[in-house]
Amino acid sequence: MLDDTLHFLANHLEAPDWRRLGEHLPVEWIEQAVLRTEATSIRHRRLPAEQVVWLMVALALYRHKSISEVLDDLGLAVPDSQTPFVSKSAVAQARQRLGSDPLKWLFDHSVQHWSKQDRGTYLFKGLVLFAMDGTTLRTHDIVEDREHFGAQNYASGAIASYPQVRGVTLTALSTHIVHSAAFGPYGTNEMLYAKQLIDGVPNDSLTVFDRGFLSAEILCALTRGGSERHFIIPAKSNTRWEIIEGDDEEDDFTVRMRVSPQARAKCAELPQFWEARAIAIVDHQGRKRILLTSLRDQRRYKPLDIANCYARRWGIETSYRELNQTMLGTTLTLRSKTVDGVYQEIWGTLIAYNLIRLEIAKAALVVKCEPTEVSFIRAFHLIQFELHWTAVTRSYGKLPASMKHLRERLVSLLKDERPDRKFDRAVKAKPKRYATRVLRKPA
Image (cartoon, rainbow, N blue to C red; front, side, top):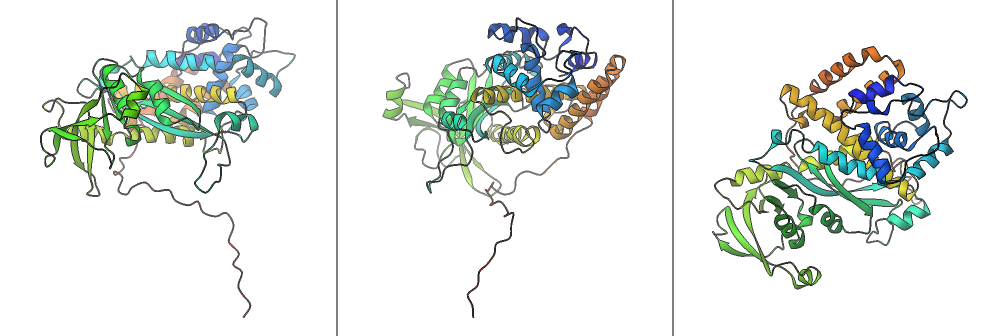
């Protein structure tokens, strides 16, 4: 993230030089984000809008610390001899003035720039690999949040204890950089969030979906809306089709499926039928599955290639784990309490996550390894330490050596190779905190 950003944090002057802000997040981007959303500060403040943007990114990196601690430790507030510390109310007001739109714009703008870097390094036969899937986050149980986001309703009639944010992301499988995201109320179906992301899928790409996204509207919009935009998705057990080329006894054939009248009524552009190539695979438990794909060239894209690409879909689950457990520290809820603050925090967290992943990818290029081979947890902790140490020492002369040390350490954090999944995922009951008292009838 980090060269010029650390320079700024370590060499904090009375009048901060915003031009030194970042190799990956230049100060010009942050100024554009603030100006485009009219969040710029006219009067002199301890926390101008530009600094609040950096605060939201830093809060994602130090979830275990309070906002006041992050401000003090990293020196993010403009110095003032009369008021050395920023009050909690001032921070809350600064965040409200900024809003969530600048963070969203900065996320979108940075991803468009970062996705073009080293694009040709991790291609699958000329295609960039992506995965799309959904996740949820919990917020504080506040009336405003519950009314806006809602919560899960169980079959028993019970309602989840905390409001929940539902979201869908498009993630690059090679680097785990989140390319785009859409999120909001829990009651909105994942398919609707996925539709918001389809137009932004890059050309010359291959997107791997979970079976829950098997929809003619989504898949046809993907393939027809750009150039060489392809998909892989497993068929459902109740998916019906007509074989138009090949034989179902083979492992590679072409099918035609009917689009439901309900779907065509909602989207008049949908055809009456749509076609896909079907690949039969056998998983590690001996079960036969069918993968549907738009990669129709059988000579160029072998069934084994398609099966291997689908197997990499689990990378997006790893990405969610890194966001929800590593960065958020397995906390029960997000930090923010207001609706706009929740959106602001999520965009800031995604920017921070991408910064870490981008720095890992840059370091991996040095030693010619895959970015996913570098341990995210250890890299995350190392970046936390380096940022904090540099902010504390304020030693400008030691920063070049510090950055060299950081990237050398990143490439030394290669993960041990782990075996593939042997058992299906299962939801296990949480252990009880207290022992259960058993009442016995008197003899």
